Image (cartoon, rainbow, N blue to C red; front, top):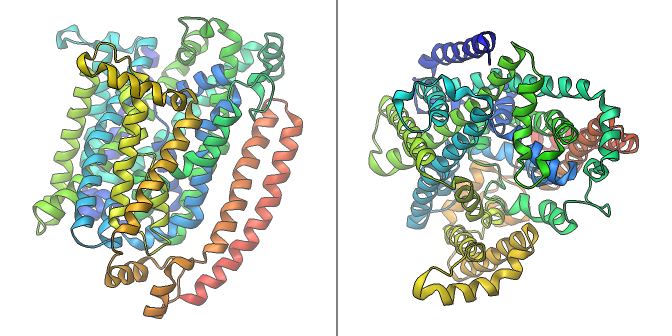
Length: 607
């Protein structure tokens, strides 16, 4: 990187800091201002912030690696979450906004009562704020280090600091991010997210365009892939004879993963932005805007770069090769001075948008669900804001420690995700079935942990474990068929094994008191047959028509996947896919508009 590139990066950092400092006074007013922006975010800002949150510095590298190894169809590993994200638009966005919580953990003591609810709230808040959040930030730092190493950014760090200079470069950026996230709260996070998202998107497009032009255009790129024996990498669905993604894994992704995961009803960072939206309609529009940005628009620059990298660097798939490193490799070889700085700034922006969200989100649990709930219920708003700021600092320090000392954070983070795979069904059903109780949710969390531990055993060589090596090896051999089945086996056993446990516990424990259930129903007013008793007892009709919302979700999924395939088909000269995708998107849009109009009429009549 030359002087011009560093100047571009420097200008970006200054703009981000000034924007955060400008908003610091507004974010300091109260706990609600600091963590949910005073519930005044417009849909376009909340939706863009949601998209920026899911875009980290390693995301383009991850997609490039997936495309190289498994082709376009490999992206179903994350495309499958579009089902849950469209469900968020039409089923959960308005419910979360009506709940008026600051964190998703706060909902537990609105939906459930007594000591089990308090225990669940404390455990969820601590787990999400500290281990999961800290490991996630540490993982992001190590992923960012990979980019720093490829680009040589760490060379500017003076050797006097000691340790890994490349990692120090990342941690200094994280500390810079802490300045505006800790001072301005969510206002600073979402405002810089907006700027950072479009800078990151511009950087991805620049890399894709320059790389494609160098190989002679999209058509030539496609022809060279076919000539090199990589025609299967162009398949959108894994049904070809040479598909790199198995059909079983694909079906597990679209049939289980999205509803079994702990973010099945939204996820903490998304819920924070929905709660911060101006009203229910703005929350719904924010979730919809996120889906368009995340799946229809942002997918294809990354996929195209992955395909171009496969043409230019076929050695990346050889033993010892790293297809994920192809992204920064393209940047260094093909971007001129100035543009390289812009794209580096875009990757830094992606890192900062993710870390700033993790900082603010984690601190919200500590300030709202731990400190205010269990330590000092009478704390002033100013005191709570300062607790949030101090917590933000502590979380970044812990994340830096993890990044410096953990040798296999990626493995640990994968395990932490596995822990949260089981409870998804409970998180969905608690909104629509009065019988779900706190013990069921606790059981789902513990069962998910237990099954994750069991399925982790076959991945380790226990020969050196001393006297317990024999029993552990026997258990590993017993569970090996499940592990060998890959994601399909692991997801199936985790999801349905967890369901057996929590259903059993639920029916063996008493339901929540009527007063708690009535209070939750009157607050959120969810639809569906699961609240018939509460409707009859309170005499209040639901604001939600669950049937209309589920049909809206079905048509919305058609819009997202249809539009995504239409864009991808046009870019990759798959004209049949383009035509079918466009037709599905158009038809689904017409049907969606009709049913949403009907739903709006019903909702207004029930207010």
